[in-house]
Image (cartoon, rainbow over all chains, first blue to last red; front, side, top):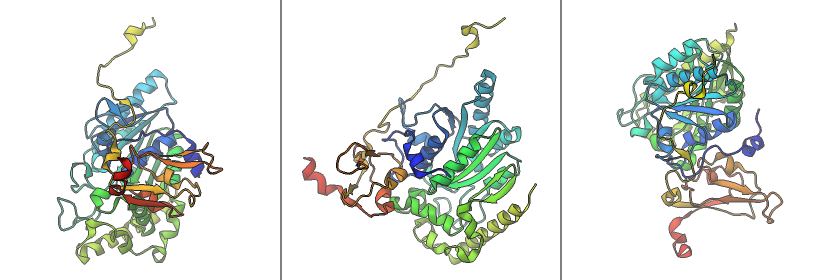
Length: 300
Length: 106
């Protein structure tokens, strides 16, 4: 695993004074991602929070080349970039598609599925704040059960899509989930992905203080609680073989998980939500765990 | 026959943003609470630097006050989210209301 010292000694890829909200974990996530991948990176960013906070023309807070593209086109434009690099013989450049959950789970699902099926050489990171936070917190395909958004004022009914598992069924060389509160784990996974050729997918949980309605200083704490309560499972699949990450391994036993209420109590989006919906969330979490653990037992 | 450089390069003219500090202006103006470090209690573990989303916290390794240096917060850009104060293992960062600095700033 990467050491904290190593993370801190690499140059800062994000310049201060960008337009992200106070305590934004997507800027934190991108900072870790670019620290992990180095300076030789080309990024594509569709419409999402990052396309806003990177700064208005003529300034940018990101120190690597960025291609801002239409909402659905993060993966397809990254395919083009990687094909152009291959044609020019530049094999050492990493292509990073960096999209929000709306741009990957809902709007960009067709293009990301296409790029995955072609196995184009790129790293695709979905940073998920589980809603369309940028436009005023509307429900997205990744919003968990019971969560209040402006379009689900009494709590979300139904279950979200598990985009990491959707990508896993595409037989990719690398699929993983991560959380911004665990930078060492996230950077380790990115470096592993960088060494491989083909389509690599990482789902990054990025707690959003504005959308989830918790105080900005709790950003890291809420992300840690998501893992400790089992609501977000950290796993990786190298060549299809799913394995729980060391941080999530001990929560395989439900007795060791913290109660879900601890995770929800900080979040204003769960304030006043009916017991049935919270129970539905717990059921959803337990079901996700049984899926992941049974898939982890299957080896190629 | 190899192509000349002009033929080979396909150029697209577009707007290009260049990396610079303060792309959204002096974001320190957004702040309502200011993180203030108690440098005597600080162990220079650099957890605050690791978790700063801005990132506007750095360490000045040449500062003579401590063998590891001194943690410096750039108040021009710090938005006062308070993650550093919340995550500090020593609890040596205090969040102080900006109004208390008004006289000092003048």
